[in-house]
Length: 432
Image (cartoon, rainbow, N blue to C red):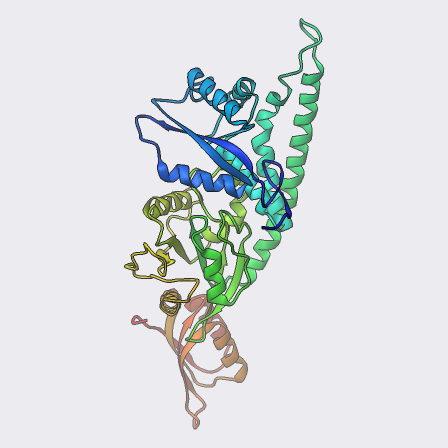
């Protein structure tokens, strides 16, 4: 292995040396330990640049207000970390600032909760300026209520009304700086999003297909296969954070826009959803959602449920969607779905393209148009604004009969034809 450096949540490491951590998972409300969740958390730690060398689990009716796990279990976690020589403890849960402070004081270790871990992975994976801005905003939103814990080791210099210690003063300065930076980031992102909306408006006549799915389901590999794109893809959680849109030319002569965006995960931090909401608008504004699922994943149904729940949170649940069962070439895949594909090998891709084409055609307003005299300019306009299935010209009279599906509806066509001096008619078709 190489010795190249990588900046991660844990420290600057080499490929040969990973920071070793203790992972804590708690089953609440009478439930059993979620083994799939523990496995996923282990992968998250690895994506952030760490290595889980020991795990501690606990079952309890509800979280403890002081330590989340209770004082006795917290002491066990602390002694285990000390005996193993570990300095980092990761919780598969979201902790309050107070819980983090008390756990760090007791264990003398760095305590990282689930949200901080995911935010750190996003920060490591961010490659474009836009993604880096969004993640910085999410991190500041997460850090702001926790700033006080960073100064708990500084005592007040005096007592009584009006006295304040250096820690409290610095805390106020840090809070003001954080809020100022957040305001600046929000303005920058608003400008970026406004430009994106303008670009989206320019191509609004095109049918939009969004790829949604659990992280590492193969969405980026799929857009690469469909559109001969060069989107970065890697067998890693959250390998893609930016929205990427590419044109897909269909066999019938039409085209659609395929968009890939950030993958979902169970308990995706709210701050990330808020920061990436405009990025996820590409899903919310799509005409069709392809829910990409890993067919070889034994926990695929639970992950699909997580994706559908997230679609509801971003108000995209009403959009037409279909599940695409990816990785059908792998051991463990059932291959039984209507759209079973392998984005890697290309198996089933033609059937998927045909399905997209059918959906595209269903979304159009189909009609028969007759025009007594059709000029070259008018023919060009019709072909640009519709899919033309039939264009028959009477060479003697110059009249034409066209069967086409309009991108923007009948009224768009009628408005164009209303300025003609020749006779014309538009009759809707019902069998397309």
